Length: 116
Image 1 (cartoon, one colour):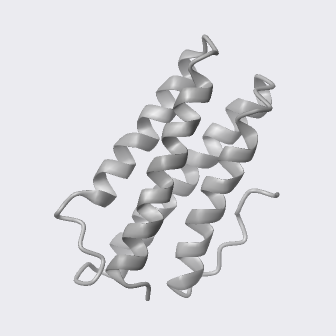
Image 2: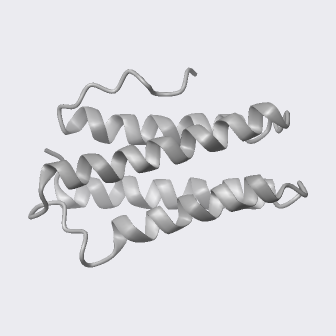
């Protein structure tokens, strides 16, 4: 199981790349895209709150939160493909890979990562 510091490093990367995604997406007048980015930011706030303690939390709750992140990132990727926002697609793939790394560190098979 990843340590709290490992998890915090990944959380910082998730937040940084979500911020990049938000900046890149600002040039598109796409409410669906902006709404999905906001959902991702809200999920990020959930996993960085003081109540989310990876070391004392039930593993199923951690898996559930990671699944929510994965689904949200997948939805973002679908939006970028549907609207041909090609500059956003690599960021979505990287975010998906980060979640995949966490799930793998937890010993969970995740064959649903976005293709590179």
